[in-house]
Image 1 (tube, rainbow, N blue to C red):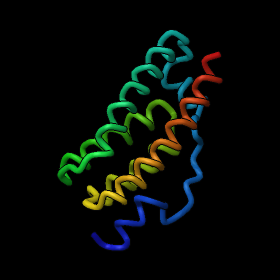
Image 2 (image 1 turned 120 degrees about the horizontal axis):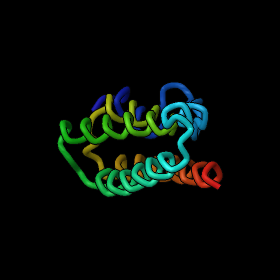
Image 3 (image 1 turned 90 degrees about the horizontal axis):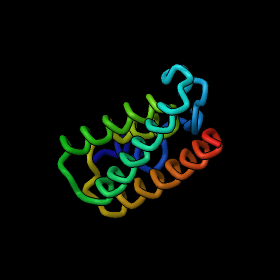
Length: 125
């Protein structure tokens, strides 16, 4: 894997400046329907749990790109814009073969998903 590709895993080539949770975007996507918002956030957090397990394991480049592309799309739709931006970088870089690199990605993922979950809790309450 090239040094350029590896850069997407631990740090973006440019700082990630997107919002942890874009509440305005999410409200527009859900037409302000609180019940729908609750359901979508719950579904997204369940998907995050599945992605967490997948990120820890080696996988083919095709499987990696599918998983990170799916994560990028769902994170963007729910308003987790920083996570979507990171997933876009991971998607482009391809599957890391190195266990240390997977661990670094998993730690970054954990940090971003925890920040989103905290912001979503505040939004829902």
